[in-house]
Every structure is written in structure tokens, then in C-alpha cells.
Amino acid sequence: MKEIALYFASSNEGKLVEVRTMLEAAALPICVLSAKTAGGMPFVEENAPDYIGNARLKARALKASLGKDAWVLAEDSGLEVDALGGAPGIHTARYGSPDASSLVKCAELLAEVDERSETNRKARFVCVMILLTQDEEYIFRGECSGTLARNMLGEQGFGYDPIFIPDGHNTTFAELGARVKNKISHRAQALNALMGGLHSLTHLQ
Ligand code: IMP
Image (cartoon, rainbow, N blue to C red; front, side, top):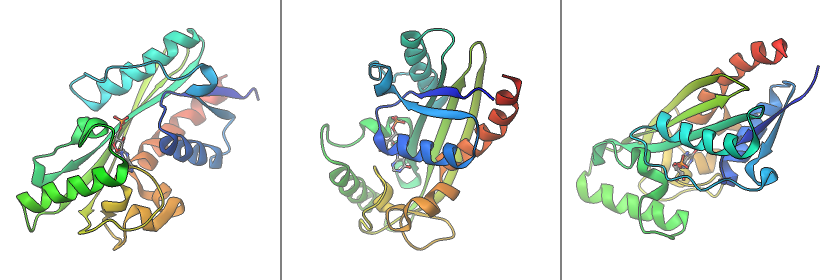
């Protein structure tokens, strides 16, 4: 069976590693290529009103630079914190001090939540993925609920992993590591749905 090149529309290395690891483990005739191998991820102003819209903007931008036959996978994700009324949500990538490190952004978010609410630390990660094949668009969604830690814990993963404790665990994503995170995360759930779809799509090639 012919292997399909699937271009991942992101310049976030952490996301790319997770997506590649999970898709490769599924033994599909798919090869995940970074946007870098296609000349880099084009700049996209993520100004859509929701995750689907932003994922679509990224997917279409990369497809436009690759040509109509290319298969492209894009995602938009975010962290929704109850004590902040669901923020940062779709604005997560641009939240906190501009140009600050992930660790500084984690500390800033914890400080903001501590100021607002002593008790309600509920939060969830949301991920929407868009797959563009030659002429179709497919949408997949995943969500992972949890609570915010009191302090940053763990060194694995990326972004807000050091402060997010998924339900059913008492350590953060950054402590749990890829093996556990890739089974339960928002991205894993969206990818599981996508992989179900890819099974039938790749068999049609
Ligand atoms: P975007 O999808 O490029 O808009 O970025 C979403 C932002 O949400 C990332 O830059 C991270 O800060 C955060 N984020 C999304 N998924 C995760 C995750 O799995 N772990 C930690 N942070 C994440």
C-alpha cells in the first residue's frame, strides 16, 4: 500500500512529537512530516472565533503552500480554566507576557487563579484537529478534564503540562510523561477519532 505523506501544520515541536508518536504507533500507511520540511509553517493570524476556525486557518495556509493534492493535519488547542471564566481558551498560545518562557507563563496563570479563587481549580484542555485530504475536510475533537496544581511540577512535555493534573491522577502531565499523556490527553482523544477515520481513508487509496 502506498504511504501517504501527512503534513502537520504547526511549528510547535511538542505537538509534533506527540502527533508523530501516536500516529506511528498506529501502524497506518502514513508518514507525518513537519511544516519545516515544506519550507516552514506560513504565518497565520489566529483570529477565528473558535478552535475549529483557527485549526482550519492553519490547515488551509499550509495546504495553499503545498498544493491541492497534499494531505494536511492542523490542530488548535487551549486550556480552559473555570476560575477565569473559561480563559485563556482559544487565546492560550498568546496568553501571558509576550515572549515569556512556558515556565513563566505557567507561574503567571497560577498567580492569576490564586488571586481569583482559592477553591475552584477545575480546568480542561481542548483540542480540535482538521484533516484536509485532496478534496475533503474532516474535523475531530478531544477534551481532557483536570485540576490546576498549586505549583509547577515535572519536567516533561511542553506548555502548561507542569500545572495540569488530569482527572484520575494526582500528578501533572509533566510528571506523568508521554506514555501516560498520550493515552488520555485532549490530543490523544482527537487523534484516536482521526485514526479511526484514517483507517478507512487509507484503505481507499
Ligand atoms: P495553539 O493551538 O497553537 O493556538 O496553541 C495552544 C496553546 O495551548 C499551546 O501553545 C500551549 O500553551 C497550550 N497547550 C495546548 N495543548 C497543550 C498540552 O498538551 N500541554 C500543555 N500545553 C498545551
